[in-house]
Length: 432
Image (cartoon, rainbow, N blue to C red):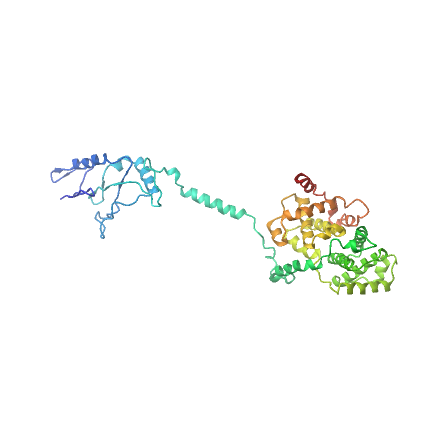
């Protein structure tokens, strides 16, 4: 029995077929298969010959119950390349018909031009080589590289993640708290040119006073918060009140007394302050100046000083003891310098910590975490940082060496002995 379809070139013949010619009921039909092979030779070289066996079930050798799958279907570039390699590896298999497990032979030849399912026109002269197709291992390698880049990309660290059970860390509203400090510091800052309104004192006298108070603060072993609040009270008072030079030291002593009452547990008595001034002032003068200062400042003692920002910014910088001591040293140098009043407290602290990082570990230490929590980028801090380096260079020279002597002790890790970050000044000269 033979069924012939001229359009689809399908020939179905009985089983027990031997390749290269077989015998059934006394008839040889190998020649007919041979004729089909000759028909393949006239197919256009630029077109692919594909054996389509999807229309039949391989298990029983019969057609699918829904009918044969259409012979003509689009050939994607990748599928065509695979067929090309397959024919290259097994040329004989692509030239001869197949015999199913049940013995029925199916020969389906398609004369279909190469098309691309993605509307891309394929090259008809030659099939797409497999080398242009990314293998599975290459795709996985590319994905791994992208994932590794994401891993090593610097991210902002959660610096409060380890303090959820610490009530003093106030993790729940710490970000809101420092956002409020940032808004408040503008009102607590003084004019950088307020000294021009003073007729009997100048910038140099202010520097001498604060350098002396730093030594007094160190001798009394007071808290760091007390020192920074003392300096803030002095500047805010001098901005609003004219003072003669012989009363300037009294202003410093009273500012220290008020700061101690606000920050300390054990407050120095008035007689102690009179004694350290070499009895230049009486107890009555101290109390009168205290009253005048509080009224002038409207009793506003709650201001964000540099110390408020220093603890937070050092935490963001993941500082060790050495970095902390050097940062404190640089910040106190800035308190002495009148020129640094043009920067808000948070900016001075960020610049001092950035300078300390550069001094100890070189450049490029300002991380995204530092930038996020301080609100200042490395480019913004460079100018102020170079001023801090200049103060560091001259800390041990001249007459104002109180800060240098304080930090040149074992208690502060000999932070004053660190070499300044000269390369920041070199970079400034090269860019200019």
